[in-house]
Length: 506
Image (cartoon, rainbow, N blue to C red; front, side):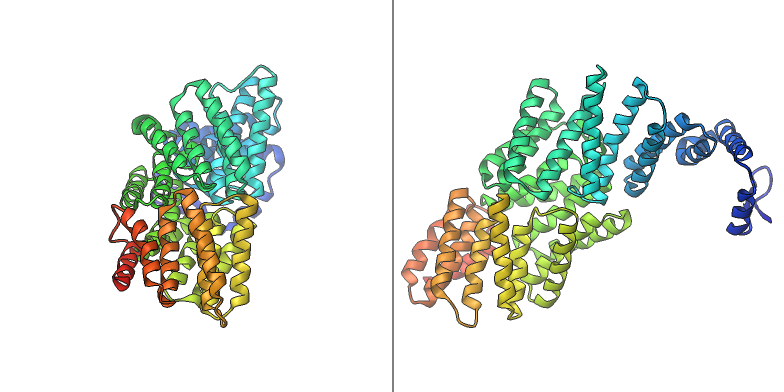
């Protein structure tokens, strides 16, 4: 029935078949079974301390089966937190849930309630990266954590660690950001920032500036958003703040750089954006936390797509897909799929692009996410237009415009209108008047947002149209000032194309 591996006293013994083990285990009555598990747990603690320390889930399982519920809960909690630190996200979810299930069966005490809050808050982070920021299960975990904290405060037992409340508030903002509700995220960011300023703690204040920066940037106040990222960066102390990465979803020192990179590019500073993007990946690799790396690769791929550096965007996407598969993260796998589809749409592979983007956008919505759709939908529209599917192309453009209007995620709004103008010109019956109106709208939005990179693209589209109409002087008068505004990034795709167009017009 058994086989031995190695020689005593270091030998280990295994059942020759799992069915034999199951049959033997099934013959045990409840109390003898519990007693055996208790003896095994005692032996592990007494004779195999290294195993008990490095693999608490083994000891936790035996304590659970032995009916040592409180001890099992502590061990499952330790196992879950350890898995979270190692970026074993799927395992962390399972172990933290088992700990919370055990606690729920015990009579409430102040110490157990504190442990329950700590573990419930910890559960939020792996759920974010596996299920998605706005998934029903993630939002339920956030609500439960907030409810537990409120109950503890009502009992005059507030959490000893004030960071727990900040983690819950941050997760609540993140869920609304991912599902994107512009008014709500701006209001929540303002509340968070006001609260942490009263508390005076540096790290929550840093996070508050990141939240406000993202909220402002994504709703069209890009320069104000960048100012908050600058303040966050000024507050960051890697020695103190880097160890908090696992508790807050990803490392703040990396997140603020990758988000500021978007703002830098939009405002017309491509080289500054490139420095932030490169620095974010370097820091993510130094930290060695999978959640931070996935967050960075997903955002960086989108940034390099904007740069027109498609090779780097694809490389980041491929790495993201590998890590996401390894960590069991459908959320970041979907992000990688949409980023890859965007590159394909921009590099002459519309059929592959449309298939990938349709699949990715569908999965994105299934996870409760709508953020970034105003970026991805125009790429899908472009792919449909290249395939001659203009009805589908206009449907995507209409959906992007409606999403922008209803959610107030306006940072890609100028580009949505510019792409609409390009599609109007590609149609079987080109609509020049419609195209010009779209380009004018794109220019107006870009100027209002101080989004110089979008303004340059819209000006190029309009200048090409006027050039084809023989209005060379008018085209030059439009393009020269905006091109002349730029002081860096002249090797990026947009500025190279703008220079080539100006040469044609001269």
